[in-house]
Length: 437
Image 1 (spheres, rainbow, N blue to C red):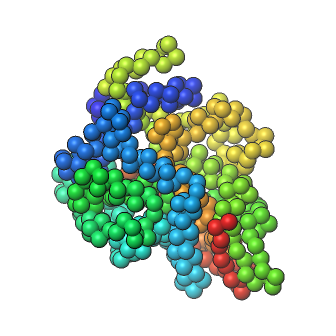
Image 2 (cartoon, rainbow, N blue to C red):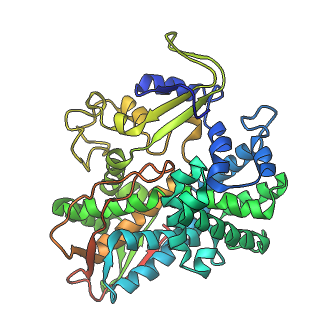
Image 3 (cartoon, rainbow, N blue to C red):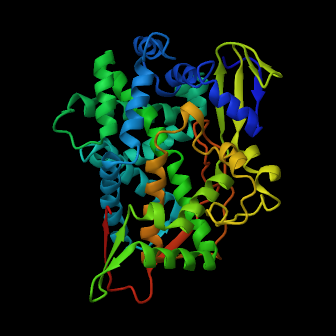
């Protein structure tokens, strides 16, 4: 699979055709082929993963896990529970910034998002909550992921990542050994995964190994996205002012004495349109990965393009996200209002919706996209409402990105930015809360 011809597709019309052929042009084979290299699980679990991989005789393990993720992470009460748990931890960490206010921004964001996300998804008994040093271990694993996928002397060529993977897998093995499905405070997502693992006979050591792979989906793109959201907002004083005004006038309730402010999280999905559009534009500009499909049988697209069985289709985001024929002459500019419904910069909404692929598309669209969007928007909202963030050297700028991991679409920055968090003038006595309304 990894050594054959590669078809590169950047046409929205052809991508639509690919999405419609999800059985013949499938993503699941990559899970089977790359998953073992990423997590290091056993051959026995590989057989479980490959059984009915594409639904040949009904849904197999991979399809069942995917369907469980979709159900747990779609808009609804389960997603709201996760977001509420995430924000409870985020509020605690933001309160600390009121007194300990100089940090490396990306390093702080990496720690904060990791702790908040794992608390929301795995519950208070998760390994990261037991030992925050695991945060660094995960990012060691992520940093060395490409070498681990190559699987050539990983203990020699990727020693930190290889050790981190092993330690994290053992910690999650212990987590699942103690797991109580009925009494767990974990999310519906983990309950569904655990049930599928038990049903299909995945061993506890491999449950731990598989969960290390799951962490990539939870964290690898979310952290850089949150970091670049803050950079983009504080770089543009007018945008920051307008986002604050939008939040304060549409998503915040104030007590009669003006001393208690409550951010209404669910209202943000509809009312904080500028913040949402900024996030969408951020992903258009900063998401640089590629979607992939394995050609399971010969497919003729548009009666013209023959894709041969056994080959790979690649759909690079950066090319589609920077095509002026799709996005207009200002495609190279960061336009925070580009995705507003009434914006006159919209050129061809159908082509754009197909070409816009930070979460993939078709049958393999990322099931976690709703949580990631709400998580980044909510964390960003809490930060911009409460703090001025000031670079300690020079002024705000957008750090270049560096590619580290094949599993990442939004690459991390080449350099961190040391900043000072300062409570906004006139907001020193505000008591901050959030509500899931």
